[in-house]
Every structure is written in C-alpha cells, then in structure tokens.
Image 1 (cartoon, rainbow, N blue to C red):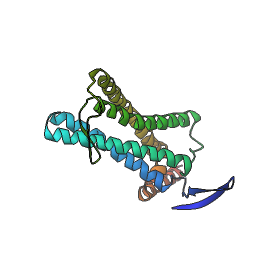
Image 2 (cartoon, rainbow, N blue to C red; image 1 turned 135 degrees about the vertical axis):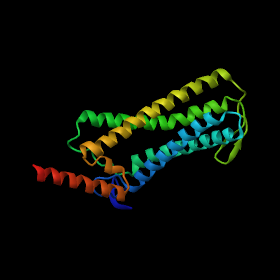
Image 3 (cartoon, rainbow, N blue to C red; image 1 turned 90 degrees about the vertical axis):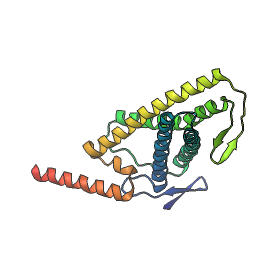
Image 4 (cartoon, one colour; image 1 turned 60 degrees about the vertical axis):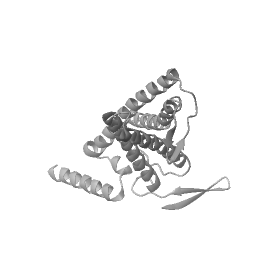
Length: 215
C-alpha cells in the first residue's frame, strides 16, 4: 500500500510504505512473478528437448517458452521502472561487509541484464529461422528469410546466457539462504511474503533467545 508522499522540486513523489526493513509489496510481487516465469522457461525448454523438436507437444512447449520469454522481458522492464521511481529499497544490514554488498549489487545488475537480453537473443534465433512463430496469442508470420549463420550466433548467445543465468540465480539463492539460515541477519526476510517473513523472524528470535540463555 502506498502511503508516503514527498515533495521534490515542486513535484509530488509517491513512495510505497514498508515495515521492518522489507521491500514494498509491489517489488516483492514482481520478484516472485519473475521467479515463476524463469522456472516456467527452464521447465518448458527442458521438456521440449525431452519430447523432441518436431513433435506436436514439442512445438507447443516451444511456443509456451517463447511467450514466457516475452512476459519475462516485460516484467523485468517493469521492475526496473518501479525500482527506479517508486520502490522502497531497504538498506543492507550494518554488519554486512562492503564487499558482500558490492557482490550482491553486481549479481542483481547481472540478473537484470540477462533477463532483458535473453528474450532478445531468443527472438533473434526465431526470426532468423525464417518461419512463422507464436508470440503470446498471436501467430507472427516469417519476418526474414532464413539465415543459418546469424541464427547460429543468436542460438549460441542464448545458450550461453541461459548458463550464465543459472549461475547467477544459484549464487543469488545460495546467498539468500546463507543469510537466512546461517547469519540470520534479516536479509532473507526482506523479500519474503508477510506470513513467511513472520515465521522466519520468530525462528530467528527464538534462536537468539536460546543463545542468550546458554550464555
């Protein structure tokens, strides 16, 4: 819910409210929508490879993969606009070293870059295939004549981007779990829904209380 209004250079700036050092609800919603879209993309491409390229199911999976790629691009762009103009971005914990903060930011920017570039390289692969393709609910006619050489470049870039995306996602998820399960500094709770964040916070307080009792 957006509550706070600030005046800057005669303009009203709307900023979302946040509690307990957590991201605003819109940022959290866009984050988890992105997660679901990425899971859907990797699932459809792996199933497509399993069932075969020329089968009817394979073509349906490929069309779904392409549609999810377009949705991912739109959501990533929306996240950048929201983060730039409206989002509440909680600060890192004071106990978090500057190097870790820098790595976290670099990882975030790398993820955004790949989320925007991957759909473009995938589209290039499809367009230079020289065949009609599905995008969302529309049947798009062939836009260019087939060019295997250029298509191969887009394919290679798309595959390398997918591997890089998996690596950055693994680093991102691993760091979040490390902060949540080992350091217990509240970083993980910043992007969790309210109910999960409350449970994680209660577990953290119980652990701290037990540590004090033992000490």
